[in-house]
Image 1 (cartoon, rainbow over the protein chains, first blue to last red):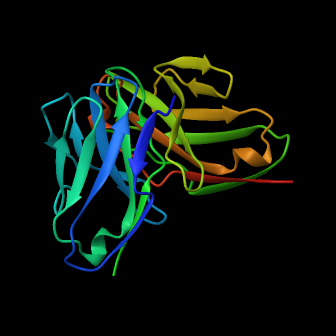
Image 2: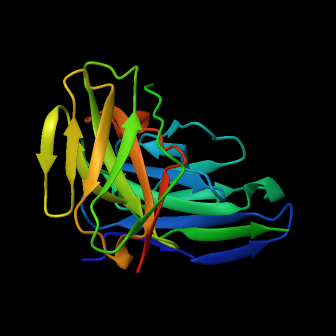
Amino acid sequence: NAGVTQTPKFQVLKTGQSMTLQCAQDMNHNSMYWYRQDPGMGLRLIYYSASEGTTDKGEVPNGYNVSRLNKREFSLRLESAAPSQTSVYFCASSEVGSPLHFGNGTRLTVT
Amino acid sequence: LAKTTQPISMDSYEGQEVNITCSHNNIATNDYITWYQQFPSQGPRFIIQGYKTKVTNEVASLFIPADRKSSTLSLPRVSLSDTAVYYCLVGPAYNNNDMRFGAGTRLTVKP
């Protein structure tokens, strides 16, 4: 049982380039989330999707877009990457009343 | 949203019991207390959740006093593999969107 799978694991971008981070879960959860974690800090919520077909902004949505492709998949897109977006990105899923299940992250460096 | 305060770091030795206290003075009536553990290069992992008094599972115990303004995560007989960052979160159990990760407590277990 894979849980939450994120791809890629590592990525280096130049300023201004775009990319999409992929996330898929196999637990049939309704809710999915994208977080970023900067060194020495906790996780901050970027966007979430409470159910298939809905998305909402979290604490730090600027510079990002998301797509809930279906119940399993939730992608995060950086249209024009900036050095301030260098971070580790975590995807998570959950069901109502249940804890968050996280993937192992994508480490993104923007130069 | 309830704000949490926990120590930035703690050291312990193998075999000892470790207690990490979290303060949450403005906890709301419908808020639960949830603890996550994060190892390097991994996403956080759920440890335990509680509302009041004491909750115990195979990994840890959670002690919550009657006023619920603080909580203590207790790890019995820690080993080197318990070295991790531990996060205390407060929020409605049914709404992960309102859960906020602070910087956590970095626990280092020494031989």
